Image 1 (tube, rainbow, N blue to C red):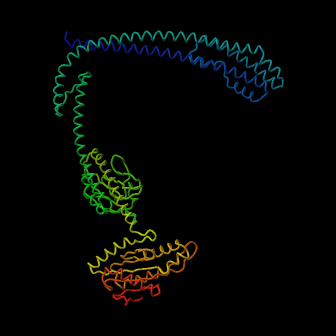
Image 2: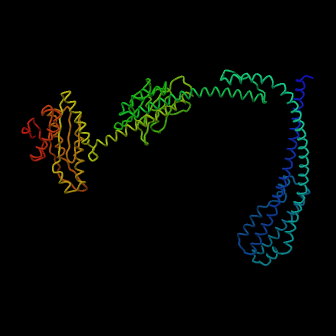
Image 3: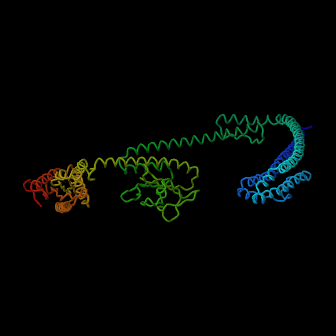
Length: 602
């Protein structure tokens, strides 16, 4: 007989034995189910009969309590219990539905009739108690006859339960024996099936192993040499050879995946180097112009194909202003309010298009844009900028996902660099600004006068310098305290700051001495400005606490280039004019001349 014939017959026999074994297992399961149902039926009978006996005891307890205490609540409870009782047939209907036989129900019906008769005695006792005859009521409810009737009811119900127990125990025993028989037959069938399966397995493995192993050996040799182009044979058998073929396919797929991951790792290393180089350049930036130059150079390399813009927040205008762009983005305005971008409003990356439907930002315009990404730049919870990108067309979702990782790192590095610049500018401003008046301090003045002198010398452009000293400032401190003196200094500083409508700079040199540096001011323009400042100071009404500090005046010394000599001597000339104004009575403007004795008083 051919091997294939033997195998086919063995397969058929195995199938039949398996079906027979399954059938016996189902029959055994059915017998066990009958056993469980018999147990459950007995539990239901116990519950229902217990409820019938409890009804009689509850009525008795309520009636006895009323006859003893006379409390009407017991009478109400008794009436409620009695009203809840149904007829005998209704009370045993649940037991009939649950499977009780007629002979069993006959015993229970007798018990219920006696319980109804007991109810009549309870009624008679309650009527006697209501009529005030407590002794008669107690004699009825606590008498020996009443107790015997209660015991008779309990005994009859016990007889009913005994009959049920006998029947259910016999049913359980039959079901248990049947289940045991079917289980034994099922075990025999399973043993025969296993034996036949082992015999068939011996012949099948002998014919199936040799040829697939030879083919798989060749593939393994090529894969060991990193030749992942070798394709394993498609062996779908569910056996060791099939598992080996599947393992070889998985090994090949892992090799291909490892090659792909190596390429991604190399690309990631390149990106990390780019990000590291960009971070180093960002750390070396001295101003926003340097930062935008670095971003414009590195952003297209870190996110190829992603056109974008860098916005920096302008606090004075409360607007996001474009600092730079790359790869010619088509959407998004050059300047917009922070509320026009959902990323800034929500404080997280916003993508208005893609798989998830979302609301487009207002700064993208009215037309439907291509997929865009808005990434807020924040430092210590404060928005300082925005990175905007436009996704390139014909790019897979995996490439977009990988690029978003680099975009987030790019946004984080730019945000940190921008925050460092802002912090550096703030520290520089703190170092260059007088904390009391808000004007630039002496250090800033030295740098500003140097730049202004250099520009005037190179371009031959006018330059004016107005030195200012508050008259009798010491009396404010002596009469009202240093806080009052500080209030006067702040008021004068505000006047000087508000006087700079054109290009110009106001400084506090120290104490009560100030200076106005006015590039491109002719002498006449400088005199007009000095008169305006003098008038505003004279009109000051400084109040400290609830007290007016009195009038405030100042002395002014004015010098201008080219009228009063070289620009590098302008400060000394104006200071000499200020000394002359103070010596001539204060509260006046003195314009310097080339000769010290030619100063003009205005």
